[in-house]
Image (cartoon, rainbow, N blue to C red; front, side, top):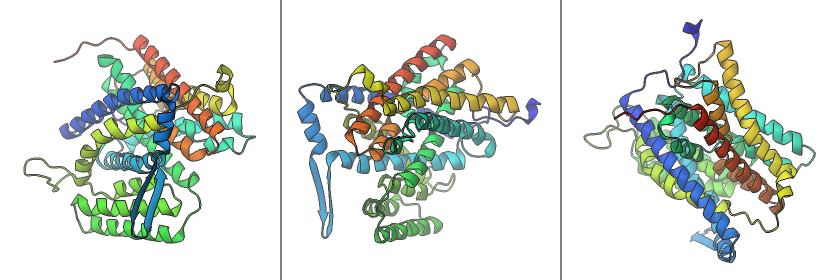
Length: 413
């Protein structure tokens, strides 16, 4: 019977180049996750200290860019959330495309376990949030907040466990998070766009058509794609569709071919891989920490312990801490029982539970969706409280559980 079970990501052999790319990805994400935690702590200190006025002034500082008739004027917070995060989404799209074409998502046998687990890990938290907030239409705008996993934060926690963590667990966690990000992108596109401008969308469509034509004609230079990407971002910003989706569209248009795309005389890289490697340190060490600093500064003065029990923060916290592991672990156990997939090498049910707990760390994407969903400060602060509480609880439970169930391993080499 076991012969018919599809190969999971950890059992399918990978090329040395793919292994090197994955190792670099995990290293950057883990270190970036630790930096992300530090930025969130600094934001909380700034928002609850004499620095609060300076912190608020920084976020509300007007920034204007004007070129002829084009005028973009936004506070610094929105430049971070609409501008810098577009670069983050560009990187997410590059990772998704690479994984889908030549990585862990290439082929049905590799995709089935993370796809079903990620899908269940979105549906169950959303249902938990709905059960507590369905009577409040405004609160329901945040139904997608507890559906996302923060890969950087989660891998940062795994890094604290050192050599105890099997490679299969890191691969499965990162692959689930990639699929999770893809689902989040679709949710943002479908549910968090408003007041669309047909003219701006038409110009955006023209930019996408040009990028597609460049791709079809085999153009591998990055400059024309990136220039068109900037133009696309401006069009999408003016269209009413959320501007970060321009980053997604641009990333999906960057060409990725395994052979014949030499960046220099010694090393073969596709243009996509070249851009991904260039962006990854900037996103991990600068953009995401800046985003965390700008969005995690929750003022605690008006909050009480009972504030966390309000419907919005409680729905988010339970969705992440309870819903994520129930969905992910339940899906994995069900697929194994049906003979559709194995657990990755080095993992059993106990370690799968630990992985499910870590997937309850929402943070970056959850805070981002909260900023899109809630204009009311009360609901937004409640969402931030729920995300922060859930992320701390999930990280603590996941770390403690895995430290207890994962055997210590001797380092090799």
